[in-house]
Length: 152
Length: 161
Image 1 (cartoon, one colour):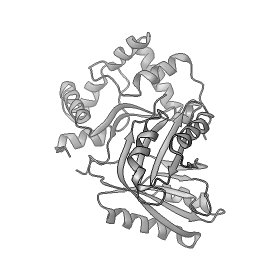
Image 2 (cartoon, rainbow over the protein chains, first blue to last red):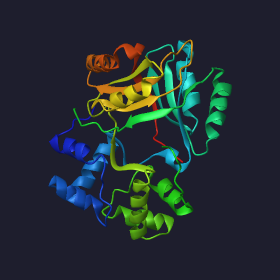
Image 3 (spheres, rainbow over the protein chains, first blue to last red):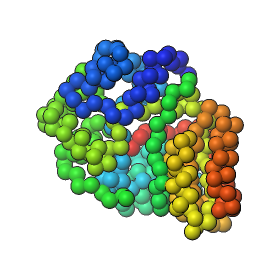
């Protein structure tokens, strides 16, 4: 894990939203942190290069674009885990995928622009892997706010 | 709640151009505007409108939570009585350590759980402590629960259209 200093942590904690919409937004954001725009850009480049940040930019809520977003799971036999992960990850509709400790041991999110894209993606995964996909579409969203302060 | 916003071709082009990240240059909205053939002022106005419509949740840093110290990640799942799950889901979602909270269908008999709450911590014990607080809040409305710890990120591409 890359070492983070106090400024890195302040950047991560203060820039998870409300990035300015103006001519020179990095300079404006940097001023609030007491540094220069160039220094902020340099830090962001390093945080992205070292994968402390997965990206810097807009976080899109795909359902509001008319798309669909479904959590799904597979029960993958141990000996086939890497092979199945490659097959699943190969689909562009798979936004993220996690190994979890449970009989259902592969949990991924399918995100598609068209509502009927989910069923097609599930069919492709079932065909490619020979395993049944368990889909858990959300019925209600109670809360979503993925903002975590830097602890490292 | 999930009504789709009306997006035109320029909105779509703007999202496609920025979903991988904003350019790391002093005037990023100018660069994006040049890519899609509109001015920086229009980029800014459209991003503002997309934020207000909820199509863009927020603009900023998206951390890899493992790299910033949140090394334990547990998807806590609960079998909550149908008539109480909505009221309790709102309360679980308002706990300060829950980052996502949803109601999802059960898949009986193998999967009895209908309430999903994502919990992060610096250790598994911290996640277990937080799950115990959720269990306490749910009380007798919950017939059982589990914590599915993640052991590996297999893919994290973010959403792409």
